[in-house]
Image (cartoon, rainbow, N blue to C red):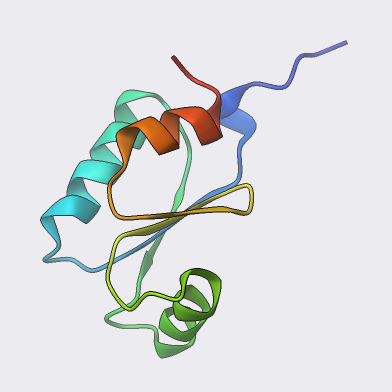
Length: 85
């Protein structure tokens, strides 16, 4: 029976192209080989509204890991949500 791994996590990163914390969050996910969907809220108003509804925040990044919402680049919170050390 296969075990569930962090790489099977459903991860969305709500970001903008000019946000340095967004780049840091995405780099962290790439370094840990985590697949993620990058959503550019500067171009997608529906996604921006979805992000605000999920997080209560207008700032980026907002990271959705299996329904756990993390506002900003919080490496510890991301590790915990992804179950990585």
